[in-house]
Image 1 (tube, helix red, strand yellow):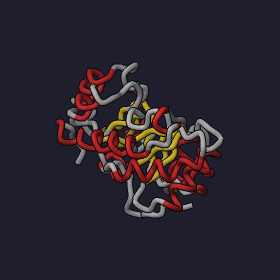
Image 2 (cartoon, one colour; image 1 turned 90 degrees about the vertical axis):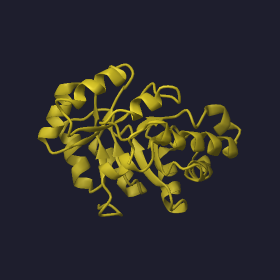
Image 3 (cartoon, one colour; image 1 turned 120 degrees about the vertical axis):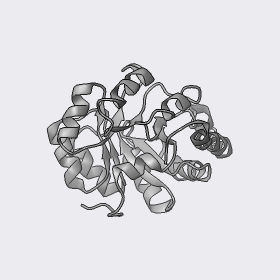
Image 4 (spheres, one colour; image 1 turned 30 degrees about the horizontal axis):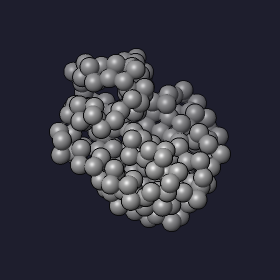
Length: 220
């Protein structure tokens, strides 16, 4: 299994947009219009979490029908899931944490990946293994912007996508940090809008999130 874009990397994921929408898809039929709304709003990198039975089908549908979307799989916690996500068409992988076996499987997939960290030791261990781009999770509970700011001095080579407890009010604070490429969140896909299939509202929320780059973020 190889990446569909050989030049695509985890760093590329961090730099696509200031926000990566984190989706919990209950009905795979919603996946394509939802992805189209997010892309139209300026958020091409989309993380579909493996929290529902519809997740792999949603990834497959987006991958096959929304060429401008860069669809990834989140909450990846086993080597078997790595294989299944790649087969479904995922273009990057995100985990809430990592183990050596999971890291080995993600490397072997040929796909870009963002392993999750919440402590300095985990960051150092990944840097030792040649990984520089990571997910910081759960961001707010694990120390938020103060923690990430403290890491920037001794570990400037590490870059993060913080996720967990982030919304439009505090996202600009994260994006202003030199070691943050983008943030992950779900505020632009509220459950009531998805249930009502209000794709126009979701596009508008995505458009506002995409503008966070100009609110002080460092996404390049």
